[in-house]
Image (cartoon, rainbow, N blue to C red; front, side):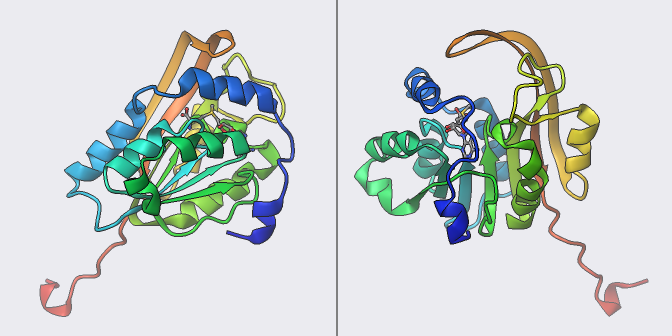
Length: 225
Ligand SMILES: C[S@@+](CC[C@H](N)C(=O)[O-])C[C@H]1O[C@@H](n2cnc3c(N)ncnc32)[C@H](O)[C@@H]1O
């Protein structure tokens, strides 16, 4: 992770700081998200994570999912652009789990991520400035270890917030394009009337679980036919 990215201020704040604080109050204490449980189940089904796996929780918000990862024995690098989020998380982590947590307050735009077994970005990537999106996506792909997973959402092009700047939106085709070279374990599209902390919202989003292939093992000479 470059120091400049740690020190860089958020290029823009949308929604503003107070809105995020209201979001944290609204969402803190919620159970872990279904997407997190799904990717963890999938990892277990594949034989479980290796010893002391590292997860990056990108845009961790009130920290509900960071806490779940810590409880399940993951080391977590939790990143969010808001100091308020880091303060809330610090208060919520039980002392015995603190050694497994590293917290970073930084904008996601321009991040260089370390090697990780899971990059988890729950309702996070849509808040990346469009001009910085592809660079961030390359950083996420690059950080995944072979056999590592990505789980997160993208806002679809029919989401109510479409057009708001500086948010990022994707079509299904673009979402599939981002997944190229990774194994698609899940691509689920949701269109629904729902809520955000500030009121009702028409949602259109894609949920993705992707896996970086472990690489094709070349057969040994005596295995060849
Ligand atoms: C909708 S919340 C999601 C929080 C949590 N992952 C969840 O699923 O509830 C988005 C989070 O992204 C953070 N965020 C928004 N824009 C950001 C940016 N450009 N860089 C870093 N964090 C940002 C906000 O501070 C907020 O905590």
